[in-house]
Image 1 (cartoon, one colour):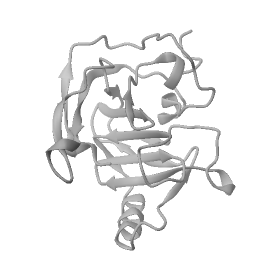
Image 2: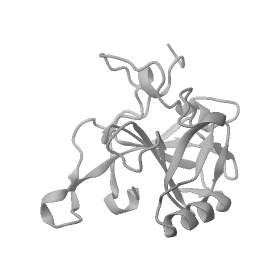
Image 3: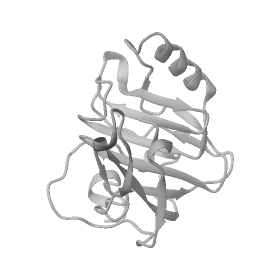
Length: 194
C-alpha cells in the first residue's frame, strides 16, 4: 500500500497521453479531476514501478521494474502550492457521496481505494506521491490504522487531498491489483483530447 516500499525508476516512454484498444470501463477514476479546474497537465516524467516478489519471504521483497505496461507511474505538472483533489468517480461505496477509502497516508503520499475492501486485490487503487497530504487526512488514517483498521477514512469527489510541493505530482493507477498505464486516454482521461 506504501508505494515507497516498491520504489520506481525513470523510463524514456512518451510524455503524452496514449491510446490503447480494448474494453473501457464507463466509470474509472478520472485524473483530470486532480486539478481545479480539471485539466490534462503537462506530463513531466514517466516511471516504472518495481514489481513485488512474494516468493522471497513472508512479506515478499522488491522485484524488477514492471515491464508491461511501459509506464506505471506518471509525473504530472503542477504549480508549487496548487491544491490537489480526489480523482473523481461516480460510483459510491457508502451513502453520502463517499467514493474512496484511504488505505495508506503519510505526509508525502496517499493510497486511495475505490471500494470498501482493505486490499488492492479488487477494484481501482490510485497512488499519489510527492505532494503535501492534508495532515487532517494523515492523522485520521493513523488513528484508524492504530485502532485495527476496522474502519478507514472515506472521501468524496471534490475533497482536497493536499498541495503540490514542487512542479511534479506523481500518480499510479491499479485495477484489481495490476498496475495500469496512467497515460491511457480511454481510461483515466476520458473526454480529453479525443
